[in-house]
Image 1 (cartoon, rainbow, N blue to C red):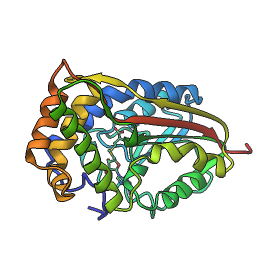
Image 2 (cartoon, protein in one colour):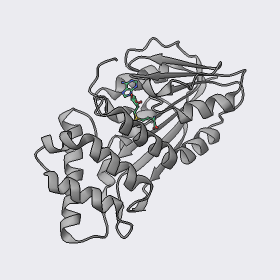
Image 3 (cartoon, protein in one colour):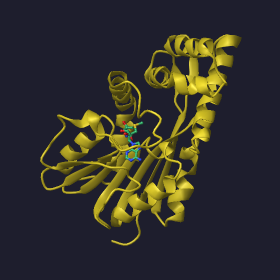
Image 4 (cartoon, rainbow, N blue to C red):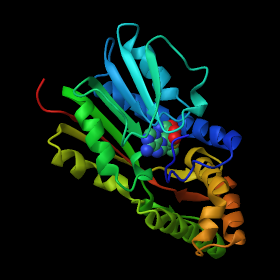
Length: 266
Ligand SMILES: C[S@@+](CC[C@H](N)C(=O)[O-])C[C@H]1O[C@@H](n2cnc3c(N)ncnc32)[C@H](O)[C@@H]1O
């Protein structure tokens, strides 16, 4: 395994796979729509960074077909066995140091990967350099500063806020930006990407649905890291998980900022 500060690197595999599959269930429809809107088509050569459980990688390989190709780079591709296809190559590497061909891909995509990197600019540079002139970069990253508990009693809302403070402290302590999504448009603009499309997806969720379930699963996986911030105790975490399960509660857990842009030339 390639070592890094990735916060989910040492969590329990079985629960991590379930969490990644839940992320895919909730977010794949919007990601697919964005990738198609950027022009994904038969014959394209694509780079999927941090494929996780691999649903977007596999779907991309179906869209590009036998004349196209998908290269997937992940620190730890342990959930991708069984996803082998003739037009997919899985590379185990850190995107910041991976040996990638220059000016080679028609599309580069990453979802929820850069937030885990203190030096996300290094990763972005790699991804940008691997794009063909005229190729498309599609990035989707969270903004945890958008989090906001809406309904619930005073104690629940206090624990909700405290868990979000713990999330902020955990990322900040690792020199990662918990609101990185907000910076994506400027980061891409600075590299000269053109025809930028920016979406800020801020779902207001009932407990027991979509993103509430993803965040409950993340909290269970990162329990020790949240406790280590000193901001929350066990009862806050338990209250947060009950809140996220309760269909009578409503909250914004985080926003996803998605930006697509085309590299000049081509
Ligand atoms: C939160 S998961 C997201 C998975 C998938 N993109 C999704 O949205 O369903 C982050 C993924 O990025 C990978 N990852 C984290 N840091 C990475 C790095 N420096 N280089 C390559 N992959 C990395 C992790 O192993 C994991 O598969």
